[in-house]
Image 1 (cartoon, helix red, strand yellow):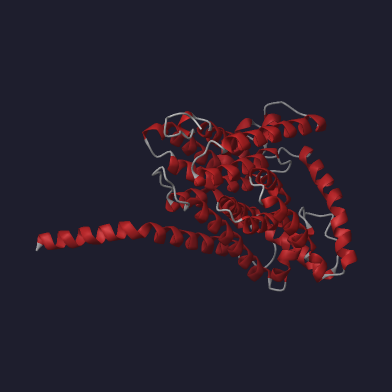
Image 2 (cartoon, helix red, strand yellow):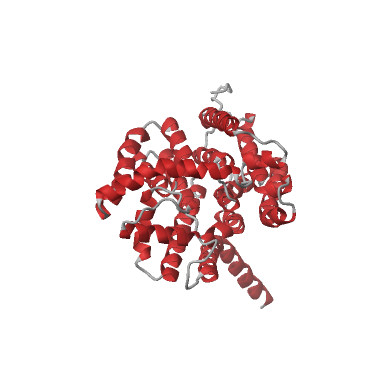
Length: 396
């Protein structure tokens, strides 16, 4: 009898282990999304709730009121896509937006982690889920479109590698319509994947023309003409605060760059990112690695070089951290796992450290962590283990 019970217990345990990872992952995401919605469910728009910014922009667009100036720092297309939510009471509209925002983010992560590999390395969706949930809660609660943009860019990276340029281009164009910070990804993509160039050229104007179908064309045109001024005014905010970016990190170290010096620095980083991507992409034999590399290089540039990077925005890098942790689960990757673990810990402590040590390098833990992650990724990409070899042993 004891043998029977032991056999039943072992059989049940094996069955549970073999099928529970996916169930736990999606269950965790469901609980996470529900918790986010319940925590931020309120009757009125509140401070720190980015949904209120989108909500007001949608209302202004429907009423043909100027979108700028104000806290709305996006293209008129972002207001257009949010108009369906404005016809609902704010708590309902904001809750649906958060669910949709998180949903696109999750689907992007799932697609990025489920690409088949030939090197026998395994990326566990459950482990990546845990890392992302830990590092993205603030952005999710605030309702930032950063998560949706990140999800769309991950989907685009996968489709580019799968030779689906039209769908990839649609995802990229939609990401740009939601947030201007998607531009670095698009620039790398059109260089790395020439088949997407014509598609992007066709789809971006189509998506950006959609607001003209909703309201008076002259009003919409006026809003688009205000975008350059909005971007110029927004860039001036960079000098009012110490933002969570590379420039902010330099400020805490006592290095204050003027406008020209910052422009040169961004140009040098852009050139370095371009060279690192173009040369590194060819050294990656795995499709999954090429997708991750494109997304990570673009996200790293956006986070470190954008003039108004907030700490919440670093949620973009969470899928990269989780995936790299999975890929380093071997004897040689122990040091990488230690560094990535410190990055996760630093991200969790970042807000508290910024309060305790304002204006010091300790308040810049997230930018420092991003530098560490991108450095590891580039180092691993250019390491000898990633060079594809011919059958005769010579390097390709």
